[in-house]
Length: 453
Image (cartoon, rainbow, N blue to C red; front, side):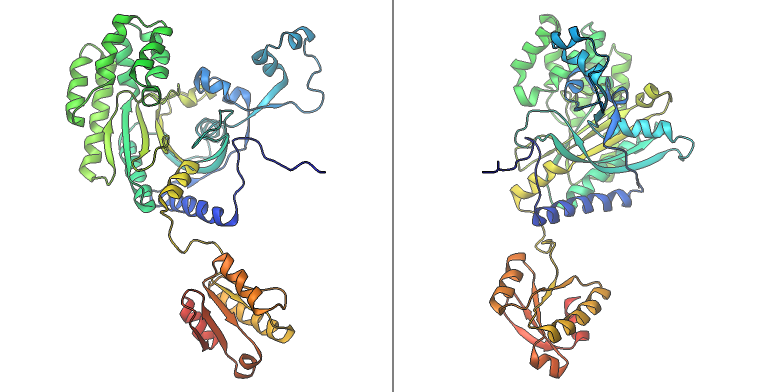
């Protein structure tokens, strides 16, 4: 007996109905990207490992899917290295390429390679899958789509304000209630300075970024494991657990970081972004969260994370300012800021809340029955007219019993069935049946087009 086929853990198949829902998400995000003046690009699924490695921190590097070199990939590899089972060193010998971990690093590489063709500031968007060798769980997959928007070549904080407006517009259209959390990497650098550990900012941010997942006590324990003293942890605690209004938190931060130039710079940047956003207004809740770190090494300024208010799930959008990312590819001094929508998590939220419009089944709007050669030929003529009018239409391909044909239309959620039988052939009409109400009427093709439009 043949083994039942399967797919890798952390990946999924999508049925036509599911794809109709996913396309609703992609189309909504794409429309808003265009509304804000972003242009679309694409990059390869594979990148060289030299492009990917070292951009996501130590934990991110471990989650990169690496691709074995073609042909005899063991040629030239030291047998002792194979015996030692030293995976990182072996991977460096056996793999030149990897699947992209996100869309931002490939975008930075794209900008450097195409800089003479681009007009700066360059506003790009990208909707493509990414891969991470993570442990699959609810809301976390090994293959998933990101929908990115970035502005590169501008230091202006207007870009952050615009991106927050863009986020708000997308989730308003999707009818998802969200909280947008903000922080600034310079504030985190100021905190590291405050406790006398500026060289351990990565250790600090990786730990405090987990506070929502593992709680304050476990964050303290991890900080201690990473070599942060009890006194320093005691100093950090009131900073990462600030309460009050956003303005009160900003004021308290300015007070706590008074001796840190970079920390105060972060407070002022955050104040400008939040006041500019407040002036325009948001449907979303905006919250300053000093524990927000998003553990990625390349953020240098504003940090953004979006949470759904009505569903327990991880962040559904994130991003931030990255002043130095293109520098590692030979183009220093180009500042950028961007966001990434997690389409798969947004899909899960919409499913959980049943927020999809009723008319996104993805099937044709009308299905013509088939009672024989003459009737089918006339139906095909009518279908051509409907399609030219922009109305999705199809025909049941085989002459079959009425019950079977109606059953297919019902199963697919096709709202109308058009019938051309012997009577309709003689009268030059089409009987149009509403599958919801059961009502049917004899119409000309022009009347059918008017009704269905």
